Each structure stands twice: as structure tokens, then as C-alpha cells.
Amino acid sequence: MNEAAAAASADAQAAPDTPHTHAPIAAAERIESLDFIRGIAVMGILAANIIAFGQPFNAYLFPEGFIGDPGDPGGWMWIAQFVLVDGKMRGLFTILFGAGMYLFMERAWERGGTRRLQLWRLFILLCFGLIHFFFIWVGDILAMYALIGFLVVGLMRWTAKAQFWTGLIAYFFGALIYTFFSIPYFIANTAIGEIEGMEGQRAEFQAGVDAALASDAVVTQLKVAGDYAGFVAHRFSEDWSSPISNTAIFFFETFPLMLIGMALYRFGFFSGAFTRSKMIVWGWVGVIAGAIAHFGLGLVVKAADFGFWASNAAFLGWSPLPRLAMVLGLAALLVAYSPGWTGWLAQRVRAAGRAAFTNYLGTSIVMLFIMHGWALGLFGELNRPQLYLLTFAMWGIMLSWSKTWLERFRYGPLEWLWRCLTYRRVFAIRR
Image 1 (cartoon, rainbow, N blue to C red):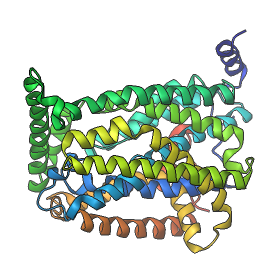
Image 2: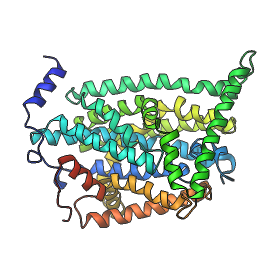
Image 3: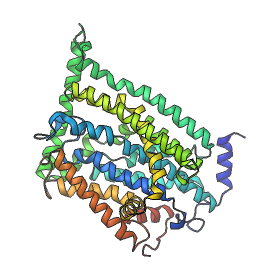
Image 4: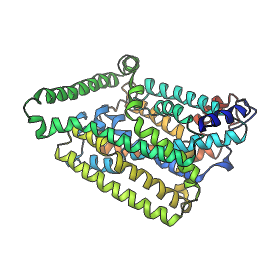
């Protein structure tokens, strides 16, 4: 019997998915390192997204997309964010998502559940993600996680080694594919585009930049005017396919990292099974080597005056491998160091991680009120340094409310709702 057939047989022999056969993970079953890393990741994701929250979406990559002066002479803050934040927090979050999927199923299997419960849970997440995308924030990743998660569920009965090596090979294959995203840069920003016969291609790429900025201008007008109905209508009419296209674009990053995260959890990576000293050494090697490579790529983009296609090439085409080194290095360091971090700040970071779902969606909702014209109307008014100050303020809110809430309640608000919908019963939320 092959692994797929064995997995199907094992699920078929398990008890049916009813609310009485299993329950959510208890507090005593939690792995502290997962909560800590998740807290760091959800805070870091805000630092990555803050530019696109407060400025046109393409300003995230392209400083000329800013409304007004970016407030970043020389582009050094752009480079710092590219080196330290962009892609790394999403990578950590994705690895944790894979680990969390297996942790969830491990507990479900112990209580007689099957993978149908995981599929139902992912379907609920997909609904959350689509609501998030269409009504709140165009940069949603939840729908993508759910769609790719449906595929990963089919591989959960593989051995940990098979999951790890499949994930690693798929990631390297994806890194090769992503190099094609650098082709526009070579045509638009280097002497290659001056070769006879390439003028048309270069003009076509410039037209693509103009189209992206024109699309941003339409959305900007709707946000500044406070036309929320028009904003949502535009999302449905013009951007409806983005959850699908984003899933396709980031598949060879997200799918492999989920598998790697699942395997690392099963290897005991998050629960102290690895030698701490080796994790620290290899963690720092990955972080430092990856950061140096990112800095070099940032200098290439700076030399191209932070052009649209140069930025895209750096983010999508050139950085996957150094990003993987940094993501795995950061994960190793956080696992190694977090047990010794027990002070008030570390406790609040863990609480933010336990309420990461609420913090992720809640941040988008708060930004909706801060930025749109029907509320505070700050969209396009803040430059890069000011948006970073707003990030620090939001971090303060995350760290303050999460611990205070969880001292009184068992789950974050959206974590509780997700659990109730998953198990189709209402759980007590108060301690």
C-alpha cells in the first residue's frame, strides 16, 4: 500500500468529525517558541506592509509611487527594510503556518479526527481571507495560505524527511523560476534594452509601469475621497482575480515553506530537540550571510535609482535564496534564545503571538480607519519615517492589549471565532 493509500485508510478508520470527538489545543499543550516567533512575525509583517497601508500599493517597492516626498534621502531606509524585514516575516509566518497545520492535525488524530476537519478549517480561513481582501486590505495572505494549504493537507501523512526534502527541492526550483522576474530589469535598466530591436520591449515595460501607477491613482482617489463603496466595487471589478494570481506567483515560496515548517515541527526543531549551540551558530550564519546578500542587492537597486523593475527584480527574482537563509536563521535563533527571554516584553510578544490572527486582521481594520477619507484620512499624508513611527505605535497597542486580554480570556477574539466555526460549537471564552 503506498503512502497516499495508507493515509486515506488511516483517515477513514478514524472517528467521524463531530464536535464530541475532539477539541481545540489546550493551553498546556502550547509550544512557547511557536507563540514567541509568531508574535515577532505578526509585528514584523506590519513593518513590511505599513508603506502600502499608508501610500499607494506600488510604493511598497517603488519609491516614486509615493504621494509626495518619501522622506528617505538616498533610499537607505528602503534598503534597511529590504534587508531586515521584507519577505522574512512572511517567511517565518509561513513556516509557522505549516508547523501549526501539523500540530493541529496531530492533536485531532489523537482525539479521533480526520483531515476533513483540517480542510474545513482551511475553508473557514479562506472565507476570512476573501473578506479581508475585498473589504479591508488588498495585501491579504490568508486566502493564499488556505488555497495552498488544501494541497499541503494531502501530504500530511508523508514522512517528515519526505516533507522536508520536497519542500527544499521545490523552493530551489521556485528560486530558479523567480529569476525570470529580473528580465524586465535587464531590458528596462541596462544596456541590453538599447540593443537594436529591443526598443519595443523596453517601451512595453515602461507602459507597464505607467499602468501600475495609473491603477494606484484610481484607488488613491477613492481612498482620499472616502468613497468606501466605490473602493469595494473597484476591488470586485478590477482586482477580483488577485487572490488567485498572488497564489500562483508566490506558490513556489509558500508551498515549500509550509512543508519545511511541518517537517521542522516533526523533527522537534521548535521544542528543543536540536543542539542549542549548533542552532545559534547556524542561525547567525544564515542571518548574516543572507543580510549581506540582501544588502548587495539593495545597492544594485540603488544604482538603478530604485526603478520599478529593479525593485521587482530584487524582491522577486534575486532574493529567494538569501531570504531562505535569513528565515531559517531567524527561526533557529528565536527558538534558541526565546526560552531565556522571560521578562515583561517577552511575555507580551508571546501573547501577541497567541492572538496573531486577531492582531493580523485587527491591524488591517485599524489602518482602514486611520487611512481612509471617511475616517482620519491620513492616506498619502505620511512619509516613510512617519509610517514607521505609526508602526511603533501599533506595536505598542498589540503588546498592550494581547496580554491584558489573554489574562481574562482563553483566546483572542478571532481565534475564538475560528475555533467555534471549526468545531461547530460555542466554546467558553472567559477564563
